Length: 115
Image 1 (tube, helix red, strand yellow):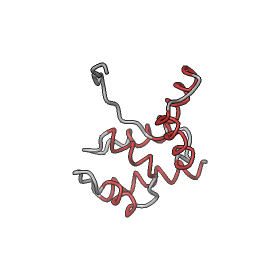
Image 2 (cartoon, helix red, strand yellow; image 1 turned 90 degrees about the vertical axis):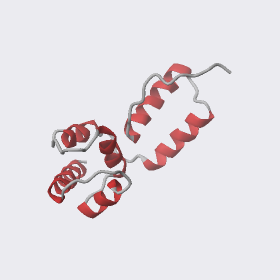
Image 3 (cartoon, rainbow, N blue to C red; image 1 turned 180 degrees about the vertical axis):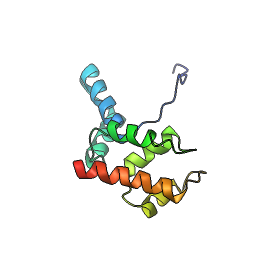
Image 4 (cartoon, rainbow, N blue to C red; image 1 turned 120 degrees about the horizontal axis):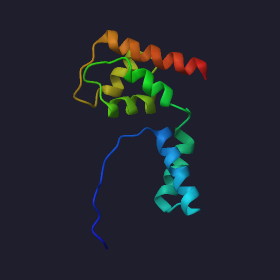
């Protein structure tokens, strides 16, 4: 087997992954086993569409220490209150004050109300 080399790593949320799988499906006309299983999983789990708008909104809050991969994880889980957001970010070595967490939760709630 040929040596594979990772060119770049880019964090993505479930919505973006679903779009990438659709591109691959159009290109190859059929997904391999793992990609097909991933597509099945995303059909069950990924309920929200067009999360790019919400990603931009959270990124524009300019919360210190909140990185792109944190925002993608927040979008995947979509916590609607501060306690749920704390649970999502618990796995990361990051501290965000309650005021900033409230802003994130409000942005998510506003986005979900529009849908």
